[in-house]
Image 1 (cartoon, one colour):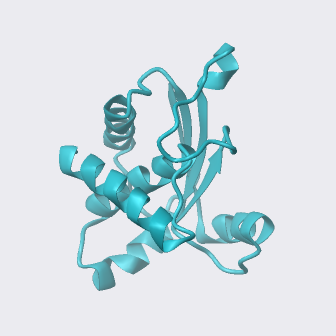
Image 2: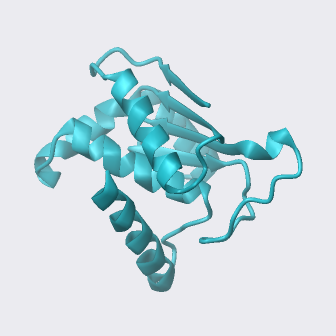
Length: 148
């Protein structure tokens, strides 16, 4: 089940469409019946989380908090209990995303799709710390975006 919370009021969002997109991503990854939390918040709040958890004293577009933090890219989650069907949580700042749109030459809807794919890939163990990791993650992201 996808739980979506929107506590920011600055940027109008089509939360129904966002939930449908997130569900489609989970379906494409064969994680249809897994839980995912998505929280849309303010730059101030995401700044606090970014500072606390990533030690970066600034706002950002998205943060991912994986339930299965030891999962490696491409590995499947082994379900031993119902609790294991939790992928984790995404925190997104629509105001930050909106600020990026002119330089990225895209729309809010398209950018949110990219961020949902990116965040969900992080929850499934993908990362972009090394160049090799980046190539693996980018390949997965591009494949998913093409199917969306």
